Image (cartoon, rainbow, N blue to C red; front, side, top):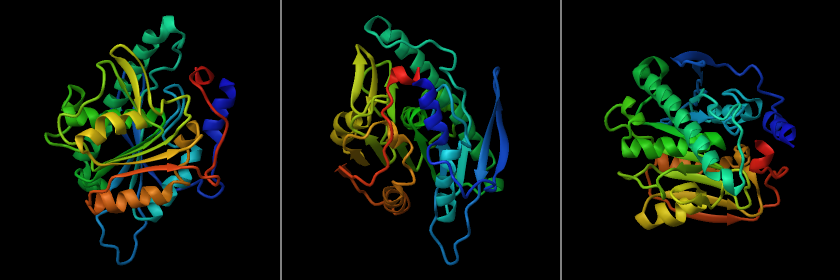
Length: 310
């Protein structure tokens, strides 16, 4: 089953038309175990377009054990974004669970949570290094540092949500960012926040968030999985217990009976993404949406559990 999961992650929606999509690669940072790079895909120039479109900073998925910044299945989405005038930056991060034995029985749940939190923290550190690179080279890259939307799939969505949380809370990892830095928005495809201190809380108002999740996701929790102060807080929990009570802005799409497939349905969710970017990010209009969808046209694939992945 693990082999099946890896095959699905690698081959799902493999493009037949965007191999060779032009990109420029930059070395961002050097770590003990590897070098970190980013790929920059420049936008297509749209005649007469005067919108200040954000840069989309993408963080790939793969359970913290696999994946890469140019995974084939995500290239059609990059192409869709660049054709609509968005610059895309896809970044590396260290795979913190690669080679780690993960067990999810009651006796090992806390240890596995600690491993996962460490992997997320490593990812946040590495993504912040990429953000710093974008800030320092903003003019040459054509990036407005105040207009970056962070987006992620699965493990990348967990990192993206944590990046926003840590930027708002100005944690030690966030000190690499300029004072007052904030993302223009967050797009999370089957994401959650891994916490070792209970329910997440923001020290300042977070950016607008687009949360897309399957209600039966068995890999990244849709609601919550926790024990004591440790917890994985998914899209539904974040809306009901964190964002909504505080009056923060969000758009959540709850796909009935879908599993972890919503981590890879960025192309199918383009209308929702487009509205989020144009209304909440560029238009800066307050829009709160809570949508439950039972859509037979939404692509679906085999359910994946934590035991299948690890």
